[in-house]
Length: 361
Image (cartoon, rainbow, N blue to C red; front, side, top):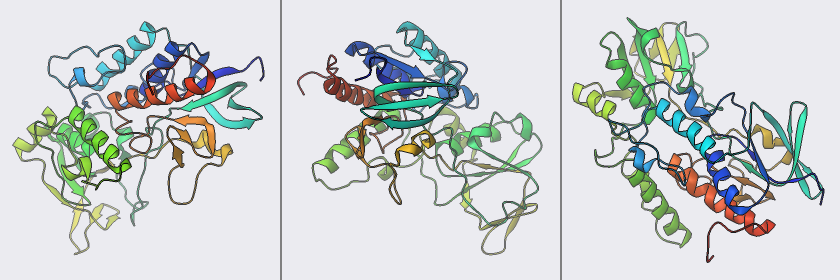
């Protein structure tokens, strides 16, 4: 084993990467966290200001340090950024930034992590790059001909640029509902909401903590051969945070079916109905940001990287955390990322001879 090798390199310094760092500190292993951002906060630094977490602060914490409470219950993006920055400082996590990892390659018994002009050799790599950096835009006929503005959720920063305009919001999930609520609350933006299927609001008393518990129970039942009850999807798609409830009460959460194509001036439905608009906001989700893993050739046709526990089946030295239900229940959330990181780091510690994180396994 090369003497210059680290035990672990963590790629990504957002919520999942910091949670991994917290647990790695407890193992005694030598590690570094590589973050492409200039400052702490991960993807939360780039979210629109009014974005709200699905859960109150007490149910939205990383391991070891509760998130400070907010006066209105559901923290906004700025509150999360401040929390992550304080978390990183509190635990003196060894974060290097800005470092953009371009490739992870096999190197004998090790993996080598490459960035511009630098590289790190490691016995294990944790990939925690999330999904924000890979927005998904579906194809619809006429998209290139539309003369108005088009942007994804990642490009939305508030209602001000849309004053006096008509905006079409596409998508039936939380981002679409919150952006619709943000725009419609101004009183000077006309909105039309289009969804592939009728949107379903969760009951007002269901928030992110309940969703995490439901997803965890469903995963456990499936692993034990039980019937699939649909989990979270069986209840609804949209958490009724305060801004969404207000939009519902104003009557602004009325959705139309998905349009068939875009026109130069707007959108058109299959029955020939058209609507002129100034902008289309695509709240159509994300894909895992995994281009740095391409040299390992781990993908299979038509699906995510196959996993065994927390590591890639075809490359046991690589662990993936924080990418959503694919890697662990609700692992793209703050509380879920912590759970996912705990299991992954414990697996690594047991393989490398560090102090175990989870006792009595």
